[in-house]
Amino acid sequence: MIYFLIRKFHIADSNMKPEYHVEKHTNSLDQANKFLSALTLLENNKHITWHIVKHDFNEPLILTKEVA
Image (cartoon, rainbow, N blue to C red; front, side):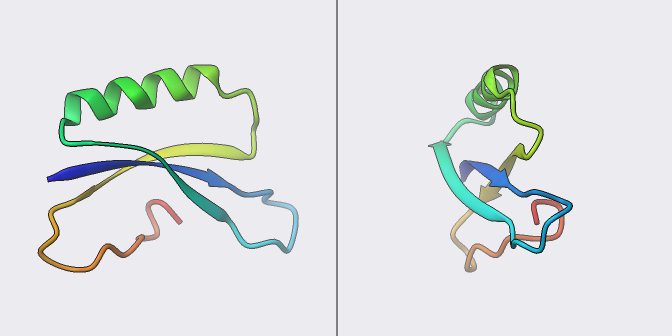
């Protein structure tokens, strides 16, 4: 199992589509949560949110509405 930390940039009041970027990846959920906590504390932009997405490589990785 691999965990991706996804950075989502989206200005809600605009017509732009959200932009996604894989910021970090790890095999440990504990490590992913630590990264998520640190990145959330450091980020000072209301248009950026952070998400953990897990993937086990049994099927293609598709972003769901939870992240989108």
